[in-house]
Image (cartoon, rainbow, N blue to C red):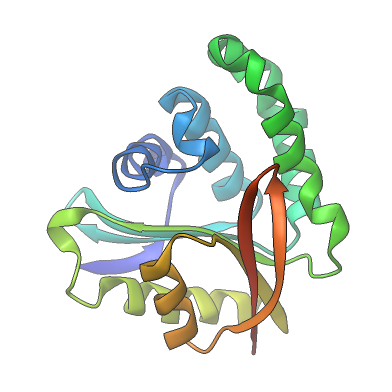
Length: 187
């Protein structure tokens, strides 16, 4: 196992892990190729920590130092190219808009966006090791505080974040009728 920063060639594999391991949520309902473009934008504009086992990725944590800049970068570089993949989801355009504009309600720009570990590698402490590397990357970027948004029903994720020292900030409703929690982590 080797923890480091993802490269552009890892984006598709990361998207597949996302869809495989994160069954709930709007992003998981999007086509893999669209999700891969999102992760490519994250890798190019910000960073994504991966744990590799040979050429295979066992898990990842995606982050951004400025969520608004990341969305702007994605829209500028990849949205039109990948929008064809969104045609079947066009009726969910409200959710896309909600995702894009939820950060405008918050003053904390830096964010842990996603964390996932393949089922075969869960329970080995990989997520904790990747998180430690993630925190170092945030420190390199001179980030003092970052947040994470987690669904109210995702108890294992909430336990993970609270166990790492995240503090509950507030409840948020990004998508109508779906409660989430916002946690912050201070460096």
